[in-house]
Image 1 (spheres, helix red, strand yellow):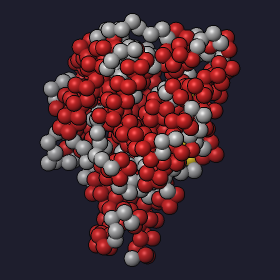
Image 2 (spheres, rainbow, N blue to C red; image 1 turned 90 degrees about the vertical axis):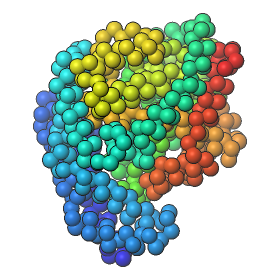
Image 3 (tube, rainbow, N blue to C red; image 1 turned 180 degrees about the vertical axis):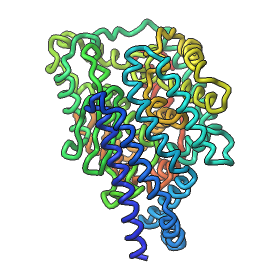
Length: 503
C-alpha cells in the first residue's frame, strides 16, 4: 500500500499547489493588485480552478481511492493514513458531482464580482451589483442541484463549510440561541448607553498597526511564517503551513476597527500555523470547518482580547502608544467602551451580544433566496425590514446595508454565514474546557502570557487539521457535543458586571 499512498499524496500535492497558487492571486487581488488587472485576474483564477477541478475529478484518482479504502478501514480511525484516504475520498465524491465548466464559471464570475463590489460599495451602487448577484444566485442553485436528495437547497452549500450540518439543524440552533439572547439584549439596551467616544479620536495608522502586531506576536502568531497587510474586508489566507497571512483595515478615527480585526484574523492564522506539518499538501492540512475556524478567531478577539485581565496588562502599553488620546481615560472607561452593547448596522463592528442577530438575518435571507421566496431585486427591502425588526435600526443606504459583506459578492450565496455564530458558541465551550484543564490560564492572561492557552488549543484543535469531523473534534476536545449554555453563561456573567444588572 505504501507505493499507492505515495501516488495519492503526489496527486493531492499537485492539486494543493494549484489551489495555493490561486490563493496567492486572490490575496493579491484583495491587497495590492491595481484595478486594471481585474479582467485578467478573473480569467487566471478560472484557469487555475479548472486545472484543479480536472485533477480533483480524475477517474484515475477515483480508482486509486477505491483501491485504498479497504486498507483505510483496517486502520485505527484516527490513523493519519486512514484519515487522509477517508477525507480525500469524501472530497472526490463531492467534486465529481460538480462539472468542471461550472467550477470554472464560478471562479471567473466571483473574481469579477468581487472587483466590482470594491467599487460599488463605496459608491453606494447596488444597481451595478444586481446582475452580479443574480448570476451568483443562479450559480449557487446550480451547485445545489448537483447534490440531489437534500431537504433544502442550502444543505449541500452548508455542508461544504460546516460538514454534517443542515439548514433545519441550524434554524433550530439559532432559534434556541435567540431565545437566550433576547432577554439579555433587552435588559442591556434599557440601560444608559456607555460612552465610547475615547475610541473615536485620531489614532495614526502606523501606530495602530504596530500595536496590533505586538499583541498577536504575544498570542503566538509566527511572523516568520506570516505577515499582515491592508485590505477592504479583513481575511486570513494560507499558501502553506510556512506562509499563513492575515489582513486588516485601519480607521484612524476608530481604534477598535483595526485592532480587533487584527486579533480576529490572527486566531484564524494560528489555527492554520498549528496544523501538524506532516499533513502539508493534503486535504488534512486545513481547519476542519467554518464554525471551528471561527471559534478560534472569536476566542482570541473577544473572550481574550476584550477581557478585563487582558487589558489590565496591555492598557498601560496602549496608553503609552497613544498618550494624548488615552492618557486621561481610565482602564474601567476603556474596558466599558470596547464592550459597549448597542444595536448597529455593521456586522463586523457589532458587539458580542447583538452580533449573532446580524448572522441570523443573513442566514434567513440566504435560505429565502435559494428557496425562491425572495428575489434579488427585493433583497435590499427585505434586509432593511429585518434590521428594523430585529435590531431596531434604520438602514440609511446600500453601503451600510446589503452591500456591506463581501461574501455574496466574492463567493456563493449559502453556507457562508452560519459559521460565525457556530464559532461564537464554540469559542466559549473550548475556552471553558481549556480553563478546566489549566485553571492558571486567567492569571497568565493578566500577565500577558498566552503559551498555556495556545498550547491547549494546538494540542486539542489545531494540530488535528481535518482528521476528524467537526462534531468528533468538539467531542474529543470538550467531552460534549456543541452546547449553547457556556456561551450564554459567558455573556451573562461578563455583561452583568459591566452594566451592573442581573442577567
